[in-house]
Image (cartoon, rainbow, N blue to C red; front, side):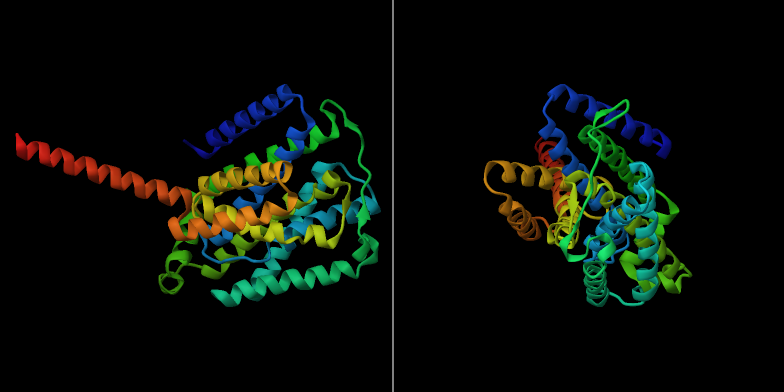
Length: 327
């Protein structure tokens, strides 16, 4: 299936999900669904750099928060339509990803991961001391009650994040099956050999950091409108940094469908735990799942399924050989 055809499939699936949510008739489905969709975008964004290219990014929350605070800044300066804010948030975070990549991508392994974490700390310190966007006390964002054609603003936010999630999945799949994706894979598998073969590794890594940062910023831009109030502790929260890494790892990093599976599974479990037990258990759920999968299935759900498939095929092959020799 071609990329455009797959994009059409994603659009049809998004339309079906939105229609199903409307039929449920419960606003909580839109609130909870928004969070799941948001983490689908973050998981796909992290996977572009961490899964396809092999560079672990601990600063996911920084790009998410940068998109959120870009929206807050513009909301206070001159209110713009939310789709425009999402595009601007993606542009700002993409440029930040490009700059961070240019400064840090000569580092590798743990050194690069530590540098991304330091970037998040520096950016949070800057925002805490920036009074125009609320500083440490945070900022309120007053959103409309309804939107033309869509109705409830909560439905509108859900619809926008649904479109963004479908776009992120389509982009991840297109990258995986393109020359760009093959270039990312050569860096992940053996960067020194790729450089020796003439692969423009630095250029490809800059593309990866830019795309990854842009998608994270686009996911963060609607965040102030979703909760109505944003502060550094929330926007730079540990749950965004941890979930962005854990969901692709649990689902299966390096594929477009692994992060999708991981995000839907983990985010849904988190929402269930928040409502049924306690909101404090959300990160505990992710931590336990991540530890369990690292022990049982290091390649995630996708890798486990592939391994079980190979075992099943091998068992069937041995069974047929035994039957043939017996006859």
